[in-house]
Every structure is written in structure tokens, then in C-alpha cells.
Length: 283
Image (cartoon, rainbow, N blue to C red; front, side, top):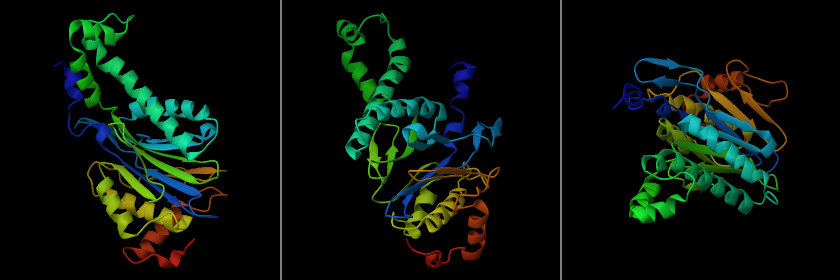
């Protein structure tokens, strides 16, 4: 094993160190907003680390917003593929959105298979690898590798359908796609268990208003920090409606037209602690 390849197996690796949170919430009508959040920590074995490891992606042209876990480079390759398929949709019906998402993930897995697996075999790149695999008698072996191939990243992807309803999807590294719009929340990354526990404890659902939902996301990010692989005091908070979106972080903790600010969430955290948050209101 070369030194460079060995470095990829250091633990913990930067790909594993993250938290990604997504919730659907309400301002004017149920489920018309969503919130995505992440940390910024990335480490490379025990050698060095960075606190500017961005994990949020914004593509307002295709109404696509996402947070990733695991290999961010893989996510950065996959997301434009999703945008391409969504741009080609005849309309933004939920069926078209989900179909475009599935097609993009399959296309990306095919590309990764061609890059990561096929070069290990004596195939002519100008010819169909399946025909060559048949001739060599290794077709079954290759399909087994296809089934076991990971795309190397997880995503929470948020968008809006033609009615303005927020849609939240989880894309797993094994290419499963699960909708979490009706349940209203999900989390990914090494701190996800703690975050999900807290969102469930707060009984988060898509009918909750924006302020209360943002506060629950803020709390669940703090809970996720109990994992040593999640950054502390470095929340990135993306608030999206069909018309506007805002990205709050330490450098830009507020915007004049944004109804939420990091200062307001920190103030609420100091006030409430583990107490109930009913006083933050209902949608």
C-alpha cells in the first residue's frame, strides 16, 4: 500500500466528520419552508484539520439546496447532475422531482463505476465493458461489484414542487432515496444520532413555525457536538422559501430581511435550555 493510499485509511478521516440536519417547517401554509444546517469541521487523520470545510450547496437556478456528509468532493460531482435532470423536467410535480433525482444518482453511480472499478480490468475503453466482461467470463463478478459500490457520500436535498411545497430527500451512499417531507426532519453524518434524538424529543414536525423549527435545528446541532467528529460553535444555517434563501454563519449571522438570526437563536438557547419551547409559537 502506498503512503498516499494509506493516508486515505487514517481514522478519523475528514469525510466522516460532519453533521447535516434538515427540517421542513411552516410560515404561510404547512411545509412552505425548509432549513438545512451543518458544521464546518474537517480533519485529516491526526495530522491536521480545518474549520472551513463547507458542506452546504446552493443552486437557486434549479431550486436545489443540499447538505452533504462523507466525501464532499463526490457530493460536489453528484449535485450538478441532479440539477441537470431537474432542469429538464416538464414540470415540478413530485413524481418528476423524484424521478429526476433517481436518474441523477444512477448516472453518477455509473460514472463512479467506470472510474473506480473498470480500470482494474484489461478492458478496451472504446468498447462496451459488458461485452468484454462476457468474453472474459467475469460479468457476474462485475455485477457483484456494482451492487456493492458506494457513491461515497450522503445528501439531504431540499427543493420546492409546483405548488410551493417544500420537499426534503435523503440520498444514501448505497443510492437509496427516501423522502422525509411528511415526517419533517432528518439528519446525516457522525453526529446524526444525537441530532435526531433531540429533534424527536422536541417533537419537530412540518407544521411548526420557522422560529421554533430553526431553534430546534440550532439545539440539535449543539447536541451533535457531543460527537468528537463534529465542529463546535460553527453552525451554518440555510433557510429557504420558494422566493428567497438566506445562509447564516458566524461571518454573516443575520440579514435585514431574514426573520431569523444566530443571535436570536443563541438567546433562545440560553433562555430555554431543555425546557419546553411552546412559547415560541405555533404555525
